[in-house]
Structures are given as C-alpha cells and as structure tokens.
Length: 303
Image 1 (cartoon, rainbow, N blue to C red):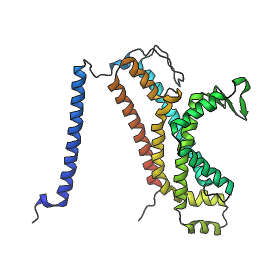
Image 2 (image 1 turned 180 degrees about the horizontal axis):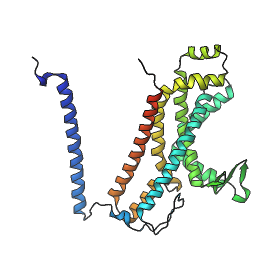
Image 3 (image 1 turned 30 degrees about the vertical axis):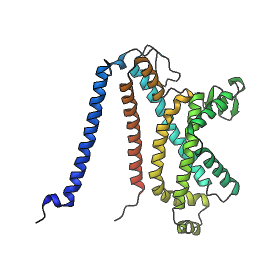
Image 4 (image 1 turned 90 degrees about the horizontal axis):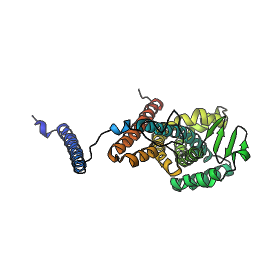
C-alpha cells in the first residue's frame, strides 16, 4: 500500500500550503516592519482624518460638495468622476476599436490604410503624450464659446464640448479622447485577430445564403469571433480603468488627483495609498467578473 506522503495529491496540497504560509509570512513581516517604523516616527495609522474638513475646491462635482465638507465626501467626488471616465471610456473605446478592427479588413484600400495609420500611429505613442496633445494643442486652442465650432448638436470650444445641452469640461474631454483613441487601437487589433480566427468556410456559407456583407459580419462572423475577442478585451478594459489615473496630468479631479491633494494636506500617506489601491482593485475585479460572466455566456457548450 502506497504511503500517503508519496502520492502526487499530497505533494500538490503540501506545495500550495507552503506557498500560502510563505505569502502570509512575508505580508506579516512587511506589516510589522511598517507599523514599527510608523511608531518610531510617532505616526499612528487610522482613518479618522476622513471626518475632517477638506477645505479645498473641486472643479467638477457630479453631486453636491462644498470646501467645508469632509475628506470622505471629497474622495467620493473623485470616485464618481473616475467611474464617469471609466464607463464612458469603455463604451467609446469599444465602438472605436470594433469599427477600426473591421476597417482593417475592408476591401476598400483607403479605408483599410486609414485604419492602419490610426492603429500603428497611436498605439506606438505614449498615452501621457497623447493626453497633453488633446488638452493643450486641441481643446485649449479652440475658439471661445461665442465662436464655438458647431457640428449639428455638438459644439466645440475652449470650454469643452457641448453635447445635447450638457457641457463637458476640456479636462474631461481631453482625458476621454486620449483614453478612447489609445485603447481603441489595441481593441482594433484584438477584433481583427478574432475575426480572422473564424474559418473561411463560415464567410462562404453565409454568402451562399445571399446575405449582404454587413449582415454576414453582424450575424455570422462577429458572434463566433467573440469567443476569441472577449478574453483579450477584458485586459484592455482593465488597462483603461488603471490608465484613467493619468487624469491628474490634465487637471481632471479623479480619485487619484483628489487623493493626492488629501495626502498633501493630511500627510496620511499609508491610509491614502490603501484607499486608492483598494478602490482600483475593486473596480478591476468588478470588470473582470463581468467580462468572465459574459465570456462564459458566449462560449460553446459541449454535450
């Protein structure tokens, strides 16, 4: 009879247990070391400062806020501003990326090469540089609101973008444009690769039924390509969520920007960093969970 400690199952379990013990030990050591250093500096970790008066203004406030409100209210404003950018950016980047990805496969020479220039030009340029370009070279260089450029229901001026009675600030507009177009380049390549992974016979079968090219793409090819697209698409959504923290570069008051102001005023570096990490981790986990559930729904179920 084989001894239990000689079985593969035992060693797999033992290896996992040892890894968990090592990770917990390292975290415990780092936590104790941090606590000891803070005590030597006379600093006690706590979140009581969140109830103190913030004392600073915020440029964009989706809900009510006054400088007399506490830091927790200010951080809530930053969180809402971040979520506004992330949600809008994901939707816009998906539309741009899918369009550019399909255009990369177009039979029209001009459309195909314009999409190629867009993808290769923007994805090989630093995102921070693109944000500076959109903010300083584009939106701040637009004419005054009195001489705004009007394109139907959209108005462009140095005060931002006017859309259906809503005024978007130049900071938000520049951040959204940069994140959308930059992330859209990677999504375009993911979509192109997903479409090309569909067997050629599916195209021929759809055309033999008399379907027009647009219907072939929408009803036959894209639904099958989603199985290859979604896993990589999830990564780009996560990158967009994390890249939104670059809002501080153009003065948009997102969570990271307001957290930086809070840290500078209170000196609570550890607590503020914990709040930032926990918030972005939660957002990323929600995005991952949502995409994993959607990915599961489009996969083939084998009997």
